[in-house]
Each structure stands twice: as C-alpha cells, then as structure tokens.
Length: 456
Image (tube, rainbow, N blue to C red; front, side, top):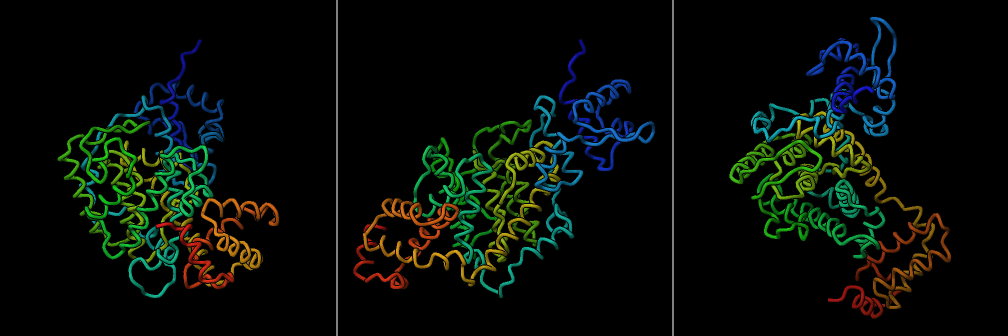
C-alpha cells in the first residue's frame, strides 16, 4: 500500500503552478519548490493531483503544462467572485495547507520598518488612480465627513453588517436593520452578536460625527477599539488599551509580539507612518495590512482595521469601504498571507475588488437621492394610513412592529412585504415636529405618541 502523500507537499505543488497562469512545466514546478525531491517523486505527485482533479495537464512531451484543476480554481477564485492576481493565487494556495505544513513565524518588525511613506507603495499608481476615479462622489467641495453624513443611514447598516459578518456573525441584513432601527434583537441569536453590531454602529457614528478630529493617532484608534470591543472582552480593562497579554491566532502559524513595551513602540510607529501617507487609498490599505499584523489589542484587531480604513475616505469625502459581498473565508486567508508571509498580494486583490463594489453601491445610492422612490410612490396612500394609525394609536415600537407586519400580510403582495415594512419603519423613525402633519396627525396626537415611542 502506497504511503499517503503529505497534504502540505501537494498544496506546495499547487502553489507553484499558481505562479504560472499560462501553465507550468514540471521543470518550472521543481524550481519553485523548496524541496522538489527526486524527479520520479515529483512526477508521481503530479499524476496524483491530476487524477484528483486538482491539476489539469495540457499537451505532452516538452510542451506539457500543468494548470490548476477545477476544484483548486473554484477555491482560488472564490467562486469567481473576486478576481485574483497570480501572486494572490499563490498566497491562497500556501495558506490552504494544514498548519503543520506551514512554517511557524513570529512578528517581523522589518516589515513595518521597511515602509517609507510616499516612497513605498502597496498599491501601484494605476491602482491609486483608478480608485480615485471611482471613489469621488462628484460633490462640491465641502467639510470633511459631508458625504458620509449624506449616506449615513445606509452606511451604518452596510458596514456594521458586513464587518460583523466577516467575524462570523450570523445576523441577516434585515436582522441588522431591525436591530439598528428598532433595537430588536433577532430571535435565536446570542447577545454577543447583537452587541457586536451595535458596537459597530457606535464606532461608525463616532468616526462620522468627528470627521474633523479623527486621524491616525492614539485618540482615534484607541477610542475606536473601545467602541468596537465594548462588553465583548473577558477583561473590561482591556477595552481601548494596548495589549498586555500573549495572544494566538486561530488557524495560523503566526505568533504575534509578546512584549508590551515593544507592542506600544510599534503601535506608535505604525500610527506615525500611516499619518504621513498622503494618498487616502494607500493609507487605508496600509492600515488594513499593518494593524492586524501587529495585533496591538487583546482582540477585535481586524474590526478596528476595517473601520480605520474608512478614516481617509470620511475625511476626503470619498465613497466609504463597506466590504459588501466580500467572501469571509477569502478575507481570512488573505490576512493569513500577511501574517505568515508578509505577502499583501491576496489582501490587495480583496481590497481593490471590495472598494470597487462599495464605490459603485454608494454612487447608486447618491444618484437616487432627490429622485422620487417608485416604491414609496406606489404605496403612498397605504404608508400614510398605516403611519397615521400608529401615531394615533398611540403604539410603542413593539406594537407598531406587529401592526406593520399584520397590515403587510393582509394588503401588500408577498414580494413587497419586507420592503414595505422596512420603508414604514424608516418613516416612523424619521418623524419629528417638522414633518408629521403630512400624515394628517394633530400636534396633540404626535406629542402623546412621542411619549411612548421614545420614553425619557
């Protein structure tokens, strides 16, 4: 019976093939392997990979070339969602290996020391020019944070949901909207998930409300961590404080720094470096790379980096980065590539794709501002009646929610029911003394309703 081939050896061959998009010869694969072994051994392993569908062989003789097979391509391309560079595919192939097959590594300060602001670039000039083109929302010159405030309602939900989802949070988008708009936790979910989303809301509002004061400094990043980690850490004193304990990274061969004094020194250096970068997109990506790599906090490091990446966008009135549709597994593997190889290729692929998606989303959001909403127009009378009934009731939030659901089931087509409830909830949340008259509500009725809707 043949001895099983270590998975790490097979994955190393896939990684070597991934470096050659046009196909790799056996000789090229051997040159890329740290320990290629005997030629016959490599040929046997290549045949095993081909038989398993992990590699595909094209041509014969000297023209024979190996390509990634269907199974490997499916994972490397993340179901064809995120386009990847050959370098990014190579990183993915490496981190797919079992931990035992990957080289244990510690924090390399040279990775941070070697970065020179406005001389070193993780993003090429072509990348930065492209992002600048798609990231400008075409608004007149305005104070920092103006654009983020215009789309704040949508940004709160998008970024809070997507960033939490990347941490394994199981709330749906609709669950998140109800939690943020009505304070209703989803049934069957633990309190930790609700707390995570609510913390994101607080952190995003902090960044947008303080657009003139935020930056890559201790005030911003420490308070950002405090907001995101609120009520989530075993040690409450660790909220907003640099790490004093040893931490490990699940599923990784990377071992972060352990000396508190050195963590603080590198943290200050990281912030000073980030603050000196002039290009907002390079600045954002630098923080997404270096902050999780340092692991300056007991936990919540990646969440801090994702929201901190939006600081340059908020300040410069650029489209925000909300990580819409980013595959969670791919993002995790991309960060492992930074941890274990100091290779930014895969994370850069994810960042570029994610920003394109976000910029397109918010361009559409802003384009729709000021245009009549056809859905609201279609249900104009029904919306007016149901909101008037809630106010005249008067109904509190729980009663209103039940009433909306009942009316939607009775008179709204099934395909429109969720959106109708969402629009009605939004209208109720936006009622104030300057706009309630359009619902044929008297001042005394509005005043009575507000007392039970938002009790002091």
